[in-house]
Image (cartoon, rainbow, N blue to C red; front, side, top):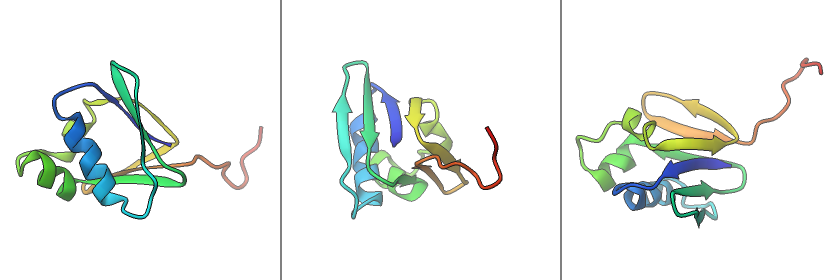
Length: 95
């Protein structure tokens, strides 16, 4: 699970920030030409702090949303980070 990023000038810097934010995860990057899939088992996160370290202090976390063409898993957003986790069936949910 993880983000699917549109190909753009900043994509390598975003991938570097994701790698730095997930030092204990095996981050896999799959280049599909017009987009890049970034994935890891369990959970992937990226913080505004590390995005700013790689893209400059003016970069805002919400700017990442324009680069997302899709994602796998359940997305969680705060003002400081975005994370993707495997979606699990909620307790009490019925089919």
